[in-house]
Length: 159
Image 1 (cartoon, rainbow, N blue to C red):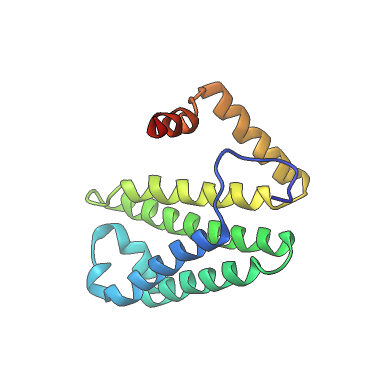
Image 2: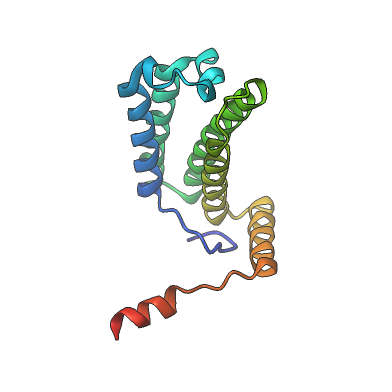
């Protein structure tokens, strides 16, 4: 990656686009019946399934197109995706705040997905903010000290 730092999580543009594509498609194909639950109350107020579906489909196209250009364009594409997922998490959070039956798991998942996209954007940037985000992420990971078992698991599979 062309950026200053490196995160332990890497999200290639194609995978990010696939995720956004299937989420957008799920919104559109699912229709209003699939987002009638209490956790989607805010989403219905701010455009409904068609607007959110088209938004995520546009993010998928932008990510695929941006991967063909410079790291700067890819940075903005990842940040657009992160913004979409963060807005989705905030919408679910708002619904959970207003309704007792609003689900909470979507908040965690979409916040994490937004963070992964922010890290991918930072890894494609040369800016100071991106460098600071990667440094923060790496320090928190070092403090929590989650062991990386990928090498030991791969060695175990070969034997």
